[in-house]
Length: 314
Image 1: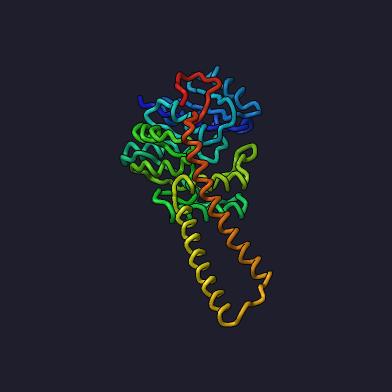
Image 2: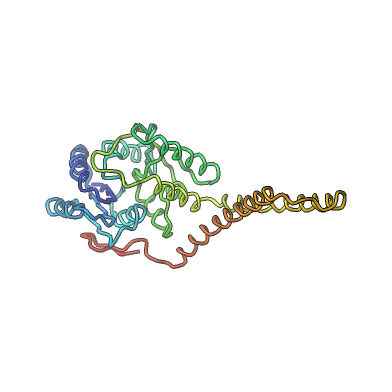
């Protein structure tokens, strides 16, 4: 009997967990030919998430849990769960049911019958999402697709089913700064995309504010593209050429017309423009340097506080 591991990263999801568990029980009953393990990864929740998961584990041996020592972020929580998974197939899905468990039977069938290594999901609509968030999300996917060689599909979710071969390859990427959507595409393998309509949270509130999503997008761009560095070099070269042209113009004007009256407004505008571009380029370089600095520390991606799974930290 093949085994399916379900990794569920959780952060303050006490309201959603009962709904998710009931939905998973329904799906598992339809897939009687498979065994399951539900790996809940508590990412430093401050509500009763961990208490509820432990109660489930006491009554259901397929419920496993990993409690992290603090909030490491969803990427680290996903990695912890995937690392602990032991199934022939491993799926990652959110506890808020925005990733419908009902797709799981179809995803397994695609891997086994159509010979795919993973089945990924993407939302084809963003109904119920703030308009400004939808706009910037689409802009991010278009931008990263152009400046990166990594496959990234618009509307892609972290929800996907992976074969053991796919999971083993993913775990070889032990980088500290993780952007899983990019990592999934970087390792390659044969992947099929399933499309579905956007589903609102079953309970609770989203933990992703616009600012957090913006920072997450920056992490993704820096992790999978050196285009910002090329852009910084381009601006530096451009303004260097412009400065030589302006210097030549000033010298010629001085020789032909004498000493002109300096314009304070135009001078300040030039200084602010060039200074702003310089700071912008230095900021880009600083982001890459900061990521490199964090990688060289070789800190663990997560620290486990308590678990009912035999596993080693990384």
